[in-house]
Image 1: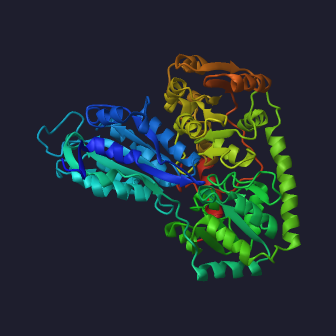
Image 2 (image 1 turned 135 degrees about the vertical axis):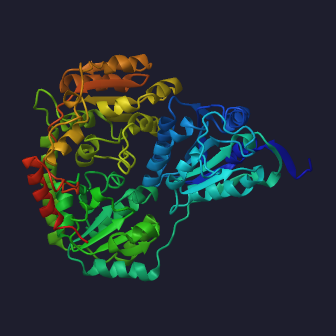
Image 3 (image 1 turned 90 degrees about the vertical axis):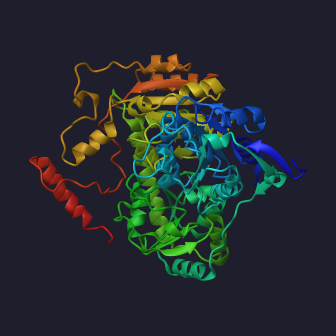
Length: 611
């Protein structure tokens, strides 16, 4: 070995390189990779497993109970860290790898960085087919890991050690780039993991990556400034890009100085404190009446850091005025035939503030929005006020919000809860609202809560989850206990998939295969969720009322271990105030009169869609 090289296996080189990657955050340099989630098997235990054990705390390894779950935790960690830090996940080949594909899709949709390191088949092909290998009868180069290709922002298969010298920096460039950030997959052939190579010492030099803030084009910015100056009723729609850019303070100041109201997407919720006068709340299908009224009457809509999901735009029926899109990603800036302003959210907002320091929205527009917010707040209080013997989701949310501290983080993902939370949860601080609604992935909730807690152990994490999602993926509750990362889980049991049951009936269908009572069964299961949670090592109790829930939440807050509180809820009611149409296709032909009536309503609603 020469002085300029060191002989290591590919796996040893990879983890040493990962430990050398740092990022600058608020003047402090910290490791970019906070650790590696690992479930070992024959495709990674001898290679990466040996390397991770040897490197120790320089790159901590965490054991999980489910590959998809650990990937969700890694993704939530990145989101909670505003995409400035990330984690890696490694599995064996076969089911371990494919279990992570759903999580990779979630990360891709939500533009969140995570490094996937699945084991792969032998590059040499000497022992083919190995255990768990999927053989393509027409292409010998394909393995199960090719499933990661469409759900990765960058994919590479490492078939020679020296390929890592090029692939690793490329991976890091994608993970840290504001425009292309998302999942990266380095598929690691298992024989190559163990193969030695003389690596240049320079490959392992400490590297500090810094946030890139893309400045807007002068012409694009000037067009937006002109549009705002001539607008009588402008509206800002704040997306996740505002938070990832750490632009919330700049946005709050800009809204105060100009009087332009701000509505928030699911990913952007928390960009403004809920009680700032310019904050209209959520927008779109699960939007507040104040925000949706503004969206329909605005003569200028300015999206900032949003990818314009159909829930945001009411399936392209909500926005009345011309659309400008401020986004660091050209792909998103050009959506819906918008006037694109490509740039970092904070950089654009700060530039707008300078150019519009002498301008304010008309008083009539500001006053109309203030009145709408007052009316909306009354509707929120009504929805969250206890009344029914069997509480609604909204009433449970009200109880949780009243017990939560200003620094608490609420976590959710799928079903009816994200819609109710988007409307009703009042966020005090950025990062206090963590709902995965880009992929709306059932099973994200508990694992996501664990990732949020890892990102900031000082904040209380409250996971709200339905019985359906809990049954799909709950194993990382045991991981949270094992790691001493306490989360509180509020489990709302409506005995099935209540959200889809409501959608089924709204589109004319009869109740079928969603609530447990409407499924094919001999005996309905009497599931004791509290006993199950206790069997995983958590504290748990079931409560019979909202008053009992209040007391249980106090106990949960003081508990030293993860705690699950179970409450039965009514699967039928939702918050009637606010909301907007959502395009869910209804059959044109059916024997059911209810379906035909729903189709007629659907056809009428589609007339308002922007082509």
